[in-house]
Amino acid sequence: MKALVLAGGFPQIALIEELKSRGIYTILADWNEEPVAKKHADKFYQASTLDTDAITEIARKEKVDLLLTACTDQALLTVAYVSEKLGLPCYIDYQTALNVTNKAYMKKVFDENGISTAKHIVLGELDESKLDGWEFPLIVKPVDCNSSKGVKKVTDMDELRVAFADAVRFSRTNTAIIESFIEGPEVSVDIYVEGGKAHVLCISNNDKIADKDKFVIFRGRCPARELDAVRGPVEKTAQQITDAFGLKDTPMLIQLITDGKRVFVLEFSARTGGGTKFLRIKKMTGFDVIKAVVDLTLGLKPHVEHDPACCNYLADEFIYCKPGSFDHLEGFEELKAEGVMDDYYVFKWKGAAFTGVESSGDRAAGFTITADTLEEFRRKHDIVASRIKVIGADGTDIMRHDLLTALT
Image 1 (tube, one colour):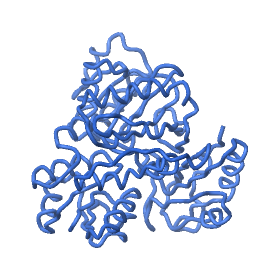
Image 2 (image 1 turned 90 degrees about the vertical axis):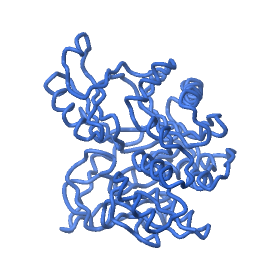
Image 3 (image 1 turned 30 degrees about the vertical axis):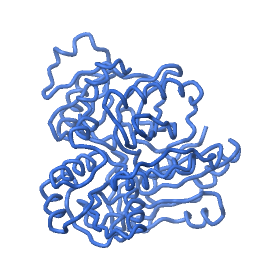
């Protein structure tokens, strides 16, 4: 049996290894020449995961039995489209995949089904007259892009014009959403839908870089600080979304804002969160979402059961860099051996260029710390923050240490 995996990021390493553990030959396709998952696959093609013609051609040429991805939005859309076109199994049909990756359609369904979300408008061209009576700040985002690409907070009309043009440029359909800004912490909710029933697996905070207009995640923290207050509204909202979109068996991610009592949905997708989220879920619940995706694709029906959490506190920290070229990490292996960090992850390849911090795709690396007390949690974080480095091609430390802020 052969499987074609789309996207060569860190989560796809686990997907490839899961497939290989079942004796399935794995082929990887990614736009980059040296993605981190490449060495784990049996064969590699350099091709954009958004190019449906190229992916179709590879699938036909290799006579694959399965087409999969994990933890990424736009590649999921390609998987659903090509699988349907070639008659291959997929846990989500193309129309549903389109519905859950297009923010304009998503907002429409939210409105029709009474799902709380921000006031919004979808535009292909900026018509300022349609924003009469709106108050700044506002949020501008592409309708069909992930990793926070093209998402900006704007405080006046001049900033809005620039942000709107950028968002349209990032959009595959040349459209953008403008929505009201809701003040409050962001909460990330990972769910598994089993037989139409939404099971909430993990509720965590997304801590974001303190930038006036960007929304780049530098830490995922579990459990969410607001867990007790939002658990009920989150479970209700998760089931509302499941019913409104007719979801049956699928992973699901919801991003929302809370004011401490109510929740407002930013967006959702029929996938697990990116980065190291699949590992976080496994540590906190015992449920393996990567294995579940493979099972679903093979026609099996995973069952959700919760194991005891590994700890009381968990943080996934993400490392960003100043402009430069990635060479290697320092301090990570030693801290793992000492038990200060549970594990660490390399998201970039040697020679990868950093030009700034624009989206979560700019992460160089990450690490996980766990603890049973808040004091131990903070102590471990401070030790790691003081000892790790990202070394560039010129031999200097190019890590943005200022972004690795203290745990509160």
